[in-house]
Each structure stands twice: as C-alpha cells, then as structure tokens.
Image (tube, rainbow over all chains, first blue to last red; front, side, top):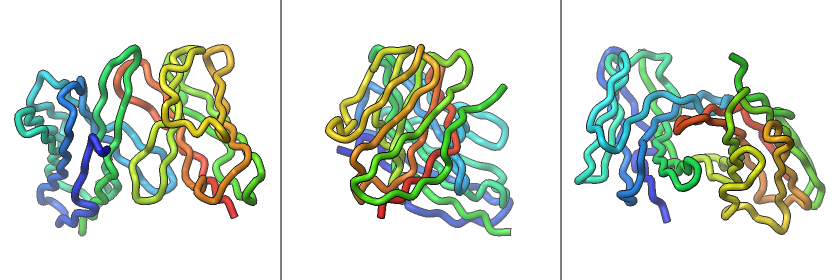
Length: 113
Length: 111
C-alpha cells in the first residue's frame, strides 16, 4: 500500500534550467507535505514543506505546489545547479498523537553542467 | 546546534549474529524515529518514540528487533538474530514539529 508515490526514479536537467519533481498521494488526511534531499552516505535533510491548507510555498530557488483535488505535489527548482544533484524524497505527514510520516521511493536528480 | 548523532557508521555481521545501533537526537526534540532504508526505496518507519513512550511500532519485526529510548533522550535499536534481508541503512531522526532531522545512518551488511 504505497500512500506516497514518486513515479520517476530519475531526472536529468541542464544547469540553469528548471527541475520539476513530482509526487502523488492517496490519503486525504495528510496535514503536511515535505521534501527531503539526500546526498550519498548522508542522512536526508529537510528542504521545504507545505501545509495541506496551502497551495504554494516558496523558499529561494525552491517552490512546492500542492494540488489537493489531484492529490499531487511538485517541487520546482529554479535555476538548477550541479550541487542540487541528489535523491529527493517526497513525504507526507499526519498527526495522530504524534507526527507520522510516510516517504516516497525518491527521485534521483542529475544536474548537468 | 548539534545534529543527530548515530554510531556506528558501518557494520558487517554474519547472519544469526546480533547488532546494536545508537542514536543521540537533537537536544529538546521529544520525538525520535528509527527508519530502515533499503537501496532504491524510501525510509520505512520501524518505531517512533514520543519522549519515553512508543507511539508507533506497527512495522517493527518484534521477533528480532527491539528498541528503547533511555530517559527520553538517547535510543538504541537492536537486531537479534540478524537475517540477510536486514541489510540496509538504519536512520535515526528526531523532531519537535513536523519536519524531521536525520542522522548520517548506519549501513548494515549481513553476510
């Protein structure tokens, strides 16, 4: 039962262009959606989040869009930089006596110089 | 602010042996998580603590895995006996609100 799905295992983008990473979910009860970035041999690091009552959140080069009717969110990185090359995990959180988080399988982003 | 600390970083054991991992969360974070991450997959929650108490251990294989959180701070995760399919990265994370902060992980190889 995959409640959070990232259907693209990898994405390759030219430096300076936009990277768009996609995520679909099935549970309407999630309270927050988050993106984490992971470099090899390191733990994931929190990147950006969005509340379920919002449809957009922006932080510098990173913007997350939430489409609740489609149960879809996306992460936009503009402009993409070689240092953005990493695995990006989409995650969804619900609060039931504590925040419970479910992660997608990840998308590996390659930014070519 | 110090991050989440984990040790060891790497461990190689034979099947049927036991192993233990240690985690020290960020100071003041009430919630602590242990995840298992198999190559090519996202982190899968094994157990979640809120202070000393267990909030969720529904996906913890309790016949071989155990975890405790000492005085609501440090935590240990133990596997006894290990199986080949336990080879994975074990991640510890802590949080005060919805975003989690992860340690570097322990890569376990079971041969």
